[in-house]
Length: 133
Image 1 (cartoon, rainbow, N blue to C red):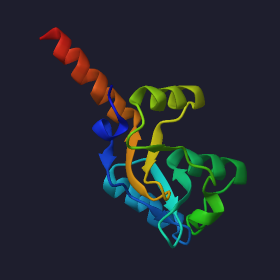
Image 2 (image 1 turned 30 degrees about the vertical axis):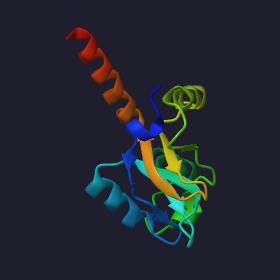
Image 3 (image 1 turned 90 degrees about the vertical axis):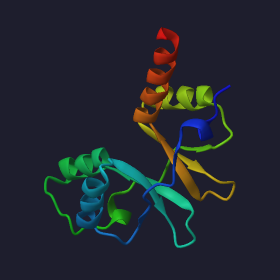
Image 4 (image 1 turned 45 degrees about the horizontal axis):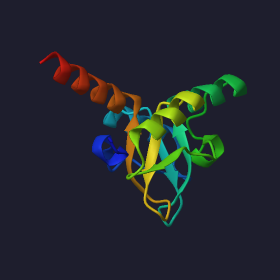
């Protein structure tokens, strides 16, 4: 059985509530990512923010204001998984919820990694390559 820890990207960029969208969007570009967890002062996941979420917010507001803070735009819910969960259960959640990333946390809710749809495509590619050989 393949576990989340076998495919996750260890560590991930975490945002703080007081950061501005200008800062976050710059980090997204610099790191070539599209989202990630928002953590509190203790490093515990309290939500998430993605490019899609930012776009939705601006579409509703009718204007773009990059001086808004993460707190004003973030989703206060984040899909979380543990490193020793099965990839099958992770996939079930991602497919049912139509999401592209899940935050891997420790037992205290602190992020230790992330699994994205790209990680899952890599797993699929590896499996297909192995069966072709």
